[in-house]
Image (cartoon, rainbow, N blue to C red; front, top):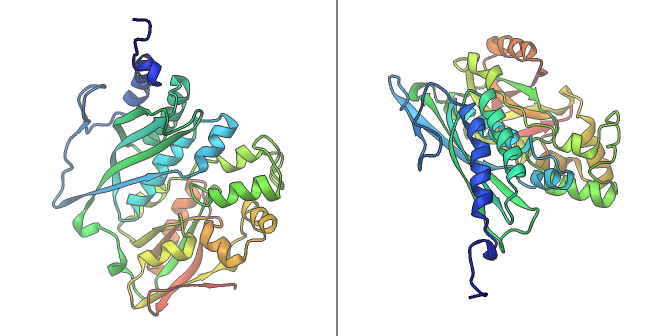
Length: 343
């Protein structure tokens, strides 16, 4: 029959999927840790159970939002996976957990093995940075759901923490210091607003220079890799009372998650200079300062709540890693609110 159909005619290329899978092999194997078990290509990933007196597993799933659109528009796919891993690492770090393993999910309208390889190369880079094994994942081709060249990316992380060492609001005390650590830019939130401002108000394409960034393009600025804070915080986890990963919702919408109902966080917004990218976006978009602090991280990627006597150790750890940290406020009696004060 000359009208015979096959999977390729329906929009799914099995050969491309096999090509992508083989491209992944060396990337996945480059992330292998002592806990990883089994060979590449199994139906499920294997990992040895964590040891300890009373270990807990901490799991999280997330994506990178519309930052993907910048990668697609610029044709730069090799860092978006790194952002994904670092975002997920920071999320479980907020509960005192260190990562064990990671899985990724990439979905295409039309699978391009080279693009898939670039995406997973970023995932592997993030896993290597954080000593986290990439033990599995899924690459899907779904014509009709996604339109080429669009794709989506999600990640799933599992880490561990001793139950007695889990961080949270119950550890926070009045008088604790709030230590802030700088971000590398927008990280992975606020992109729907940022992209609209850049395209509609600033009238810039991804390959044009971003104002005030010494010749860096829009893509350079918006694709900066989401920073992992694991190396800074891990040596001092026993000193930390609580952590807030500053993602969607900004400082007010994330720092409050680290507070008990009886305490407030007073954040002095004058304690740091808001980076150029946020000032440019706020000015060009006419975005109110309150909305900026809700939509963007404003230059702060992580906040740690610690006893004043432990502040110096965290700041020194950040300095050794080449990351700026500073005292941004303190914890006071209250009702679980975050108070932004311009002083």
